[in-house]
Image (cartoon, rainbow, N blue to C red; front, side):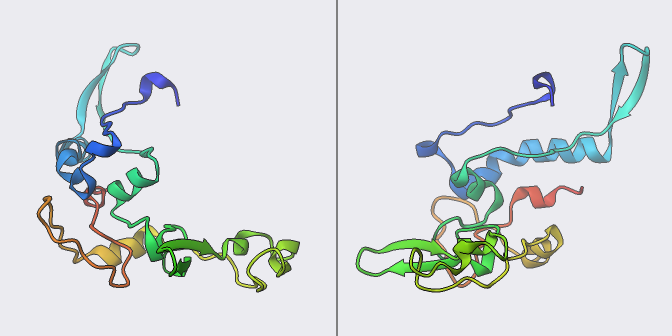
Length: 176
């Protein structure tokens, strides 16, 4: 994509970030995108000297891992830190220093890769499982269909109850 067709609509630095409340900041953008998708916009084509109806969509977002957690509502810490592995994240906990670490990344290698069977260099176990299947958009929609979002800094934090989601992202309200 050419740089003149890209738009940076929001940049929030780490210490001042709104966390899960980022959806409040994104509401005007989402409302405008919904309007442009449903009602389209009369747009002039200067080269052909004609008018056409233009749709507008949000194609993608670019963010770091903490930004991804804010935008998607998926917790990127603790037991479910990997959004690709979701419920099959190879999470372990070191009780002596309260740290999490993640294993089972060898399952993304080819089935005949020698590291899958290298017990000495890794955790004294072979890795015979296949890579996990990522959740589809329909599966995520089904998981979050009745989710109630609570915004504001005074909201109590939810305990990790076996669910990696912290909110239903405002992006899930887009119709496309």
